[in-house]
Image (cartoon, rainbow, N blue to C red; front, side, top):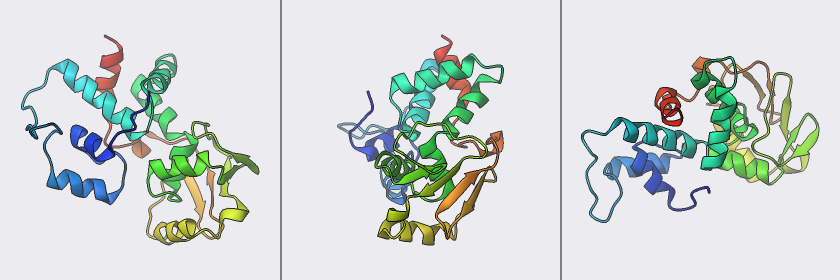
Length: 204
């Protein structure tokens, strides 16, 4: 089941900005303690299990996934010939909603998921509304013509002018479209995630 409670609480729990919005960064700065009735301080020493759990929870929440979804991604990754941790991040990076976020056309993964779920994007000329769809080299994703005049995309396109797009995507800011030109490499993966504790957690 996906968490639907206060997102600021999750950011404080994990000690990082899980959702990309500046407001959560400010909240972490103001309230660095773990959330709780008495605002308890962060534990100085954690067990190995606790470290593994926290890293898994952080990654799961960063991509907005339920436990079942995240575990399915891990099982797919562990059954491949590629290093499990690298394959896991590759699978997460190539989700459609994440690609929209990485392109700069959404300011957060949460916003990207909403855009895709509401059918605001076309994939290779067809309207799509499934955030978990996998994108691959050659795919072209574009904002639907009827939505390009939306104020939110106008604002995001202005932000896009200052955004450094990862090299596995080729963005046309004027057309509000982007192409997947290659598979994401390790240097493109989410830097805040350490996959080793996640692998250890599921390998117990």
